[in-house]
Length: 522
Image (cartoon, rainbow, N blue to C red; front, side):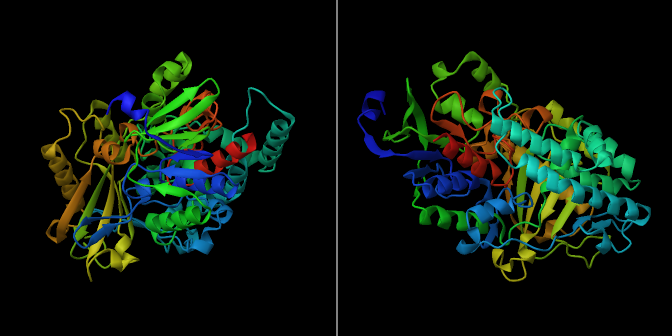
């Protein structure tokens, strides 16, 4: 369609347009609509939810979503949106995590969240694990108070900002000298060093370290990875009942009740910007939506390098966005299983959450090949079997396994093809067979999503599941200094997705905090 034809399709005028119908976009749109703004939400796919959307991947088998870890979803977001009145329920019990051992190599490790429930699993590390949990119990209230808020504008401090900073400093001091100094010491460390200081059981170290490196271009020996562990532990909750689909159902209902108009299968093509800022959103079909306010939950690279006319970006902003690191290293494989595969080390155990990484060094070796655009034979696997709690996801007696396959390159040497996808699936099955030899015979169907597939299907630049890597320099100033507080240098344009503070994952925090900033500006 020509530009001349596009300009003739003038649509409605909106107070606000939100681009992206994932959970953050839904949160932002709902809060804006509740403030009285006439709000439109655009989603390019035919269904809402993004990475949290449930889909059938094999006849009769459904997965909960590509992002099936909801342990970071913020309860205060659910409360602010009153999601309980739309059917959302939060989990109250933690699922233990199982690290299986190969035949003849012991019983593996079943790790409960509560040290009192470890039942002799940890041996000499039991006391240290209790201390570890106590440390985070003391640290979490400070982290939640200090970090779950719109970042302070340190370049132009106002009285309110000084008051906020003072309150944060006081809360930090109230941790006590010992915990405060420990926090300063360990934040920049690599996660391997800190955990090995505390525990002798390397299987325990790997279980705890894995979330600090999942989704990133780092291994456990990379500096700064301990900050990711601190954030993960401080904000962890038992999750959401029903997983991502239940969350999206509640958010959808809340948005519509607030008056949000939702259009799925509708792709934004370009933003029109004049001397006063955002002027309109042009859709892929040529329709033009007039608005002076756009909140983008899509990835920052998609927003600034595709939707915003490149000539309107300052050289500094263009450089910052271009070099915002978004290298995808996570693939997802879903298995339709005719039964639960028995683990050799504990054949009667049926864990919901399985983490396969035998130690810190094996986790590092799993990371090494991705630096050279390859994946190794000993991949780090994070496996969940949601059909144990939700049997309706599969036929009677059958199961669904959702596997996060970590340290798989987006830009695979030689490229992704049917052959390389099959090779990845074969590698994962061989890895599982080390611990559960019967797994291959139970597979009735599969789905393989490489980082490239995640980019193509879900709009993740670089296949990066967090919309941008969680490096120390990209967590607190995200995606660039100019956009670190959700507003961008273009008047009326805001970021509100996982590529903004406080980062990716299913949290709801970027969407809620961006709406707070927008409403304070307006």
